[in-house]
Amino acid sequence: MAAKNVKRPSFGLALITLIIVALIISYGVISPDRNSFGFGLGMDAHIPIACAAIFAALVGRIALGVKWGDMEKSAVNSISQAMVALLIIGLIGMLVGSWVLAGVVPGLIYYGFNLLSPGIFLTATLLLSSIVAIATGSSWGVGATVGVAVIGIAHGLGIPAPVTAGVVISGAYFGDKMSPLSDTTNLAPAVAGSNLFDHIRAMCWTTVPSYLIVIVITIALGIHYSGGGSLDTEKIRAFQEILAHEFTISPIYTAIPPLIVLALSLAKQPAIPGMLAGTFAGTIIALFQGNSLGDALGALHYSYESSFAQELADAGVEGIAPLLAKAGITDLSAQTAHDVAGMICELVNRGGLDSMMWSLSMIMTALILGGIMEECHYLEAVLNPLLYKVKRVGDFVTLVVVSCFLSNLFLGDQFLGIIVPGRMFNKAVARTDLSPRVLSRTLEDCGTLTAVLIPWTGCGAFQSAAMGVPTLDYVPYCFLNYINPFMSIALSYLGFGIYWGKDGADKVEKRTALTFPQDEVAA
Image (cartoon, rainbow, N blue to C red; front, side, top):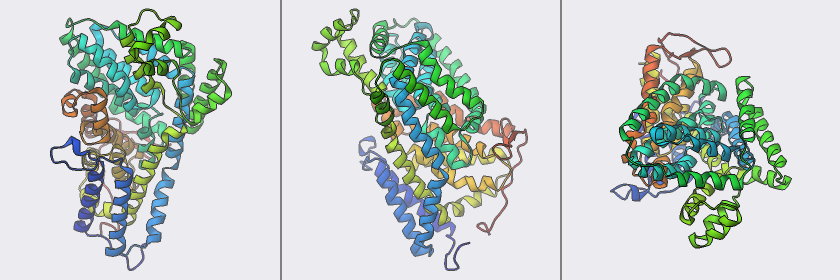
């Protein structure tokens, strides 16, 4: 119950506050090098979000009379509600560290390159990017490694770089949003009030059909570009031979830890025991391969540190030949080995609890902002006039999709594209019979996927820089990233894949009517 001296914000005050919050964050995160106006500071989002939270709190205290203590409690409660997701994100770092050391992630990459062939190059690129992203939970890592490699290979086949980059991003973001190791895949159900594996199962309704459409598109494009050149088999061979020298690559070692996590997921076990089991399996395999206990525990805490690939990357082209000869690798040129070794270092020098601290601090800062805005009722004041016009599930999903895209557009950060709309809509969904997993799924269908289409977001800027293709050039070929949001809207209007009830007791029903009850905020 709000204190008597606390005023509800008017629609105008709430809207102005939200616009200024968006401007503060946008100015902080947008790089001045990526727009013609020199706008922005190009910072990480943490401090701009903190400044925006301070501004929102000052408006709440001065204009509305909200007590500092109440805003503080709301911020802490916001973090508390996402605590399971934050724990999982920390565990993801540990799991990835163990899986790299055990050769699980390198093995998936090694065998994934066997998919590449000239006739189905783009489809194979899509599948390879998806596999690596599911294994690592990182779309960024795929763009900086697999993306760079296949763009070079595609050049020899006469396939334009923007086409290849778009296909890589489609596969990477499919794997990212469907992987239980992804931070966004854990964040979306946390802010929506769902749970991880129910969320992933719900996404299958919208993401799998979208992905199948993308497969058909890549097959058609592959036919169009077939016969344009030859496959650069030396680069593929370099990846595989360097990985095989640094890691113990085995189908059994590669398969066991992911299968354990998958089996526990299918058995509907909670995410944290599944992550711990996968981490334990990776650690045991790493020890069995001859790694010391100190190395295994170090990979859990910090990250894997490449040895052979790092030697090749540091040696320079002129010093690589003796290293290759010592390793028994005689069929690679020094230049190719040097280039590929650098890519491998980018891909495998990852994991560990410490590697997740940037994401964890970013998410916690954004949750503090969300808690303050919630306590001051800015979001409700803007949202309610729209919510009470909703008559169908499709209307609601459309509203969420638009909110996610606008959050990415104006806040410039993928996490905020999930957190802000999630905080806006989760209480409204709780007042209906609609399952929260419909909200969490929609947050990912748009919030996760569209950030990379915007040049000034961290996702767009990173992928562009990593693959050397301007964002607006690859956007037309990121088929999954814009098909999926429209698929989400279309299926919602048709009544397919709509869950009713609350998680644990919810089920799919083909009904589309939805009405949000008015409460005291609307009054």
